[in-house]
Length: 494
Image 1: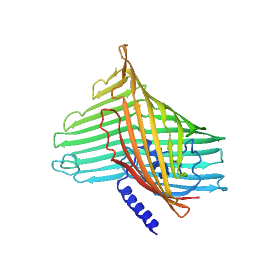
Image 2: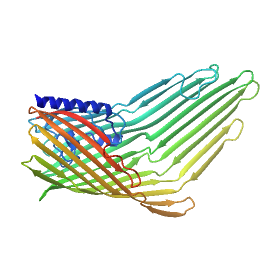
Image 3: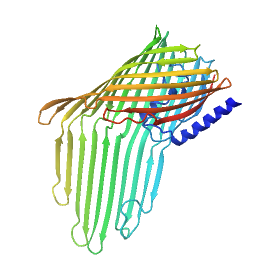
């Protein structure tokens, strides 16, 4: 009874903090953390019990979980809460297995203004609203076909869209001003991953397609103003602009290979490679237009139309990462204390190319010749960033009694960024640059957690993570006591 009371008390306290304070991440981190294992989170990723991620070394470590829910994870770089669940069904006495993991973050806000928060109107009313849509979700079905082949599929949508609408009426419906602003940052991700086993060697091959919806970032603005002066004239002005950035589709492949190699504490070697590049929609574009119309009571109507389209051509992004790391394991006190360490050495390369900027301007005025001009500016550029890095994750688990386990972990990463630039001016001149200013990148994460066994089949797992680090040596590090996330998980396993 005391054990049950202790478990329930710890669970309630953790859930209270989880729902109140746990944030979620930007979409890439959100997807990378789609993992139903609180055990893995509490040990810097080293103990992968009940993980639904398709990692090479534990590609089939999922057929013991039937149900996992009530787990509210928190991720780095985050801004709202999330819920997560996993459901699995063993088939033919675990010869096959099917499961679905999902995580969802709700982030919706709506504000209606009356009067609107902009400058108050002179004699009329001001109405407006602001709507922000930022919900993010990720779903990963997993299917173990047999002891040699496993397939995962991932679909995810993330980031946000904000719409501001305002309307001002001056005196009457013939004297008004209306404006709509929309900003967005939306992405869709599809990924298919295959896991293969050859004897004791394991291989995963994921292929991911990232679709930037209407640009990785975009903004649209529209304004309309009407003014009527009795017995004199009426005016109407419309303005609008659209901006898109890095409007691309990106394809990446990230194979990972694991092989056994026993030598002292070393139990295996792991190798990883990631290659991603743009395949469609390279370039950045912005457009602006304005229309002015003046209609006098007596006289000729005058209309002026202006537009400008700016396009940066030749934008192309590519990234690569290659790494290798051994798996080192220790076991003490009749397997009551376990420790796993995987020191990783890697090299990341990021390439960004950009072409000239072309601007096409057009002006049309009533009874006048249309004017159109094209100007080209900017230098062609190619930036290559090389980041050698090391990572040291360490996880440990201590099981003093059969129904309780304490877990802890630490993960440290140190990298050094070097950037080489090549430029070609419009006049034909060329030059190169090289810099490593603020090149050091250092981050550290601390983890802890505990697990309880209720009976033989139910498990309650808790975790907590704190982060400290910086992107450069000149940036102050967050406090080690700054809690990044915490959560709880209830699972039923075979």
